[in-house]
Length: 65
Image (tube, rainbow, N blue to C red; front, side):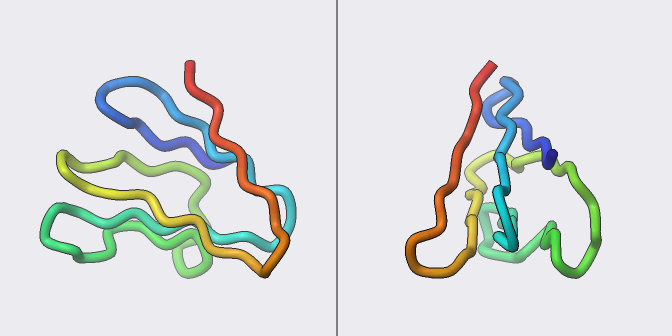
């Protein structure tokens, strides 16, 4: 399961099928893209954003701990 750190708190995106995860920094540069890297974890940079990509009707879940 991919793991992203959001504001120093773990956030675990649950990808249920063929969904993809991308992480961007404050400048809008992609710093992690699960389809390319094959990684299942990333750190969200300050002022960054998480993008979850899927097909119409796909479900996305984020678990905050």
